[in-house]
Image 1: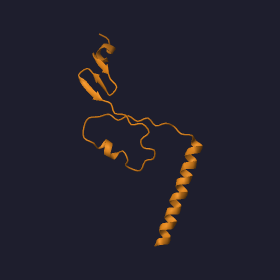
Image 2: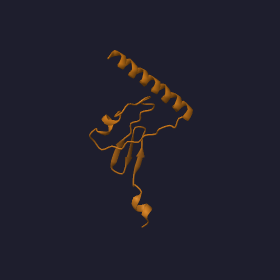
Image 3: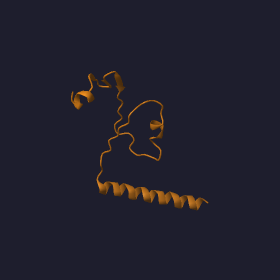
Image 4: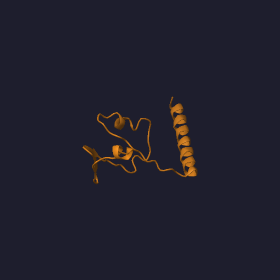
Length: 89
């Protein structure tokens, strides 16, 4: 018997919203384009959920010039917010 015969599943059924490998039935849930922007801890509620699950993420690379422009815009916004908060004090 070869290693491939030991490792390969004896049964696989792939559906639109699930996949069954041998006796293990797995539900597939996909979110596309979520979220557009993130904050610290945005994934905490998902990864701290009870249950046995695997999480897979695909992050599409962005153009460096566009990212730098967005980061610079965010930095200017944060500095303006800080200055406005200091004036209110």
